[in-house]
Image: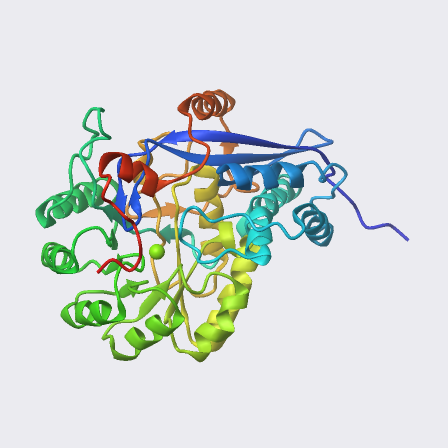
Length: 425
Ligand SMILES: [Mg+2]
């Protein structure tokens, strides 16, 4: 009787932190620093095959990635159960802080999910190269050939303090946000808009949403103040925004507040702050706190975990959309393959890609054209590492002086009175 094939076998797992230039995008807890940090994962296998993954590059996360990477030589990239055992043993009960402020209180389960994601993605990429199949195929097949994305609009300064104006210029007034939306939709063809709020007083932000609605009557618009409001403020805003929004994202902190707003709001509420792990879902569903869960493979535990989340959402009648942090082409490809394999995809995905000015660690980054990205046909994720860019962006990491994202401290250097506590209004 023939034996089941094994391998590819991991010879070495390499973690390379990189820095990518980032514009001064404003949010409820401060402002993006001049560099965003990411980590690139390479699973180098015995036959020369390489699997790629990408994740956050903050120091505590990086330390856990390296601890995990050291345990992976000898792993069969098809053996997901062995991967889980190795990562669980390496991470233990570590509870890495979430300096991004996006995923609520950290727990050992969430920390393990975040460490697991890029290695699972790299295993899938390696599996794809070994079999000649795309990651979408390995996830069960593609339900669509193009994945729609939303234009991610931000309040922003024209430049980082002391720097030159970037290509997007300032956006502090509604008219400037409309101009930003025009340029971004013209450039990439986006058919949906998302505005990051929690920056200006809620009345001003409602005016901005109203102006966007007027300028883009056919574009679904979503709005995300990142829990900057009290329940009362959120209810007032939701009432004023009736008919303007496809969904309102995290208007207020916590499940109880979200449930109170959800009960009265004329639009569904979405979250990437109060239900951000499988352990959060029973209480969120019991409380009717959210209508749409924003999946994100980077913190839900990978691509297969995201498909499991989709099954739960379908069972309970919840919508599913996809969240984005600043990311590069490996993550974009992973998001695209995941979205291709989701049976239900009612919403465009979020992405920060237009803000990176073309900087990437892969050759021929997936392109956003006509508001969507084509699902790659080539094996694995369908992206190829650009070694020169990786080296250059690693040097940028070493010289930029940042080791953790900290929007609040950066804002305080410019505005010492800024507090960044939530809710603010
Ligand atoms: Mg959000």
